[in-house]
Length: 282
Image 1 (cartoon, rainbow, N blue to C red):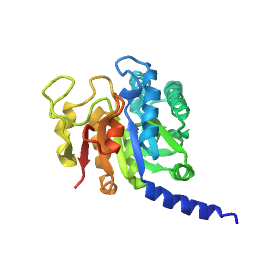
Image 2: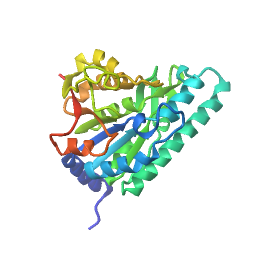
Image 3: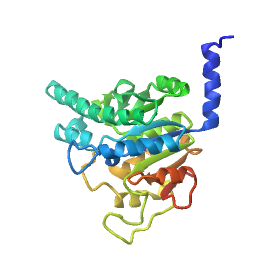
């Protein structure tokens, strides 16, 4: 006997709850060389895709745009919002440039057997002074239940006050994790987590295994990006979690590195050599 669409949806929802959803944000520093404008780390794409496939069952992938997004946003001053029709062509060009990165990465995911499907935040989000006001997530939920892996990234979205504004991948990831009751929210970067000092500058820096959200501001400043980053680097991740913290109390939140292969797998399997920082919400 054929099942109704409602019945199939209900069954899929139950399966999803049992499996546990992970929202993973891949930093732009993993997919691009942020010191060189418009430079992909293509050699890393398949490695990252393979580890995602081996480590996570049900996931939403959000990626940073790194050196494909931040340079044109800064050059054309798109972070200021709508300033006149003369800048709209630059907005259009910027979105097309970023889409090159999205497409290349999604192809790598698909080649590893991940049912990756691109979703554009610019078609789903309305912001108000750079904060998400509306987010149409119903299509994401339904395709997720079917077995697809939604892939989103930082984007420029409509803004009720600014005309348009930058919406970071960190904020998108935290929002989706909070709205979809994700089991895990992972921020994958090129550093292993939050340190007592900047590990790129001080060899004596120590990795903190766990830290309370309310005590993170000063440490976040120490691990900020060394290169151009209009979404505030590590501090942006902390602020994104803080915005949606009330709905993330049951979500395990970590910052870890995927620059080298195996750390995500080690974390998921609770291996002793896994390196990460867990963000605790009171």
